[in-house]
Length: 414
Image 1 (cartoon, rainbow, N blue to C red):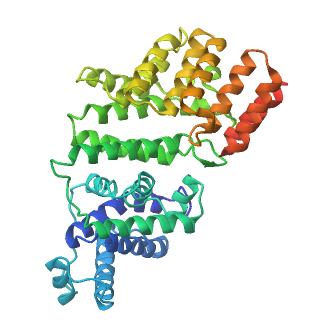
Image 2: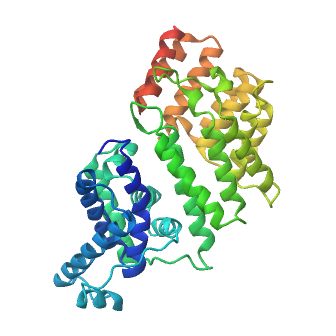
Image 3: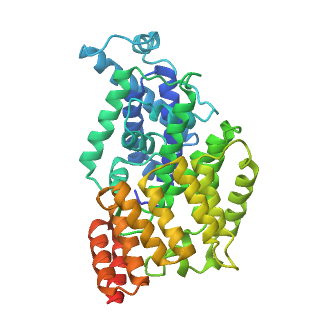
C-alpha cells in the first residue's frame, strides 16, 4: 500500500478500535494484537480489489475474532497456558457465535494506558503505543527509531511478553497508580511527538504523520481528563511547536534554524489554539515541565514582529532546570543565555555545566552539545574550532537534513 493510500489511512484509524474490541472481549492483549495484525493484512489484500466494505470496522472485528479463536485454540493446545477467563473457553466452545458488537466507545485511551504499563521500559512503551494505538507498522516504527525491522519486531514481541507475564489487564488504572500511569502516558506522547518533529534517522527532518498522531492522542487524553493541567500543557506545547514546522525547512528540505525562519510561515491558527489552552491552565497549581515548556514555546510564538524575548526564555529554562534537572534542559538554557546575554556568557555557562554534569560525555546530548559549542565558537570568531565541532556533531547524527545543515555550517565557518 502507498503511504497516502486511503485504505491504509482507514486501517490505521480503525486498528486501535478493533484491538480494543478484541482485548475487551477476551482480555488477552498480546493475542488480540496478533489477531488484529492478521485482520489488517487480510483487508490490505482484499479491499483494493473487492472494495471497502460498508462497515469496515465490523468487517475487521469479524475477521479478527475468527483469528482470535484460532490463536486461543493453538495457545491452549500447546499447553502454554490455562484458560485465563471464562470467555476464552466460551469462545472456543462456540466459535460460530457472533463477533463482538461494534462499540462507539473509543478504546484508544485505554489501550494507551495499557501500553504505558510500568513493567515496560520507556522505549518499549513508545514502540508498543505506536504499534497498537498509532497503527504504525513495525517497519515504520523501526525507521523512526533508526533500527532494523527485525530488531524492532523483537523489541515489541518482548514488550508484549512482559505485559502478559505481568498480568496486565485492559482496564483503567486504579487510584493507587493513576498518577504514575498517566505521567508515563504523557512521557510517551511527548516522545512520540518529538520523534515526529525531528526523526532520529532518515532523509527527512521530521514525520508529519507521527506528530499528528501524538497530537490526536493528546487531544483525546485532554477530553478524557479535563482537570489534568499538565496534559493540557503538553497539548499546548505540541501545537505551539508544530506551528513552526513549515518554516523549519526550505524547498529542498534544508534545515532552517529558528532565527532565520520566515515567521510569516508559522501557523497562526495553531499558535492561537496553543496559547489559549496554556492561558486557561497556567494558573492551575504549580506549573510542571510541560506547561513550562509550552510557556517557552509561547514566548517564541509571540516574537513575530518584535524579536524573541530571550531573557524571559532564559528565566523559564532556569525554572524548568530546577524542576527537571536533566542535561537536555541544561543545554537548552545555555542557548537561551547565549542569545539573551551574549556568546561569551553562554560559553562560560556551557563549560560550567559540562564540568558539573558531563554534557560532553553524555550520549543523550553529546551531539547537540557539539553543535551548540560550534555555534558559540563561530560567534566568538573561532572558525577552526567551530568547524571542528560542527563536523563532529554531523558525524553523530543519523538525520540527513540535520547532517547537511551542520556540514554546511562547518564549510561556511572556515
